[in-house]
Image 1: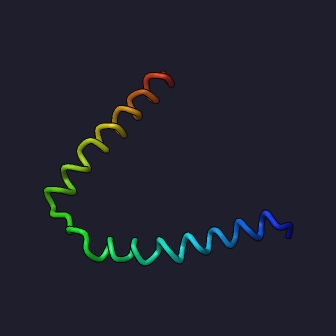
Image 2: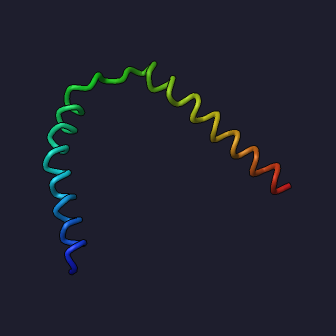
Length: 61
């Protein structure tokens, strides 16, 4: 291993050491989604999937 890979590994470990605890704290203290929130997020996603499927069918035929 050359020195750039070693420094990259050191930087990755430092990133995990400094940011990891903050991410875990944010996940633990975040507001929980309700059913209405999940449905509101799924409607646009389903629309996009249906639109892409329609485009595939039109391009195939």
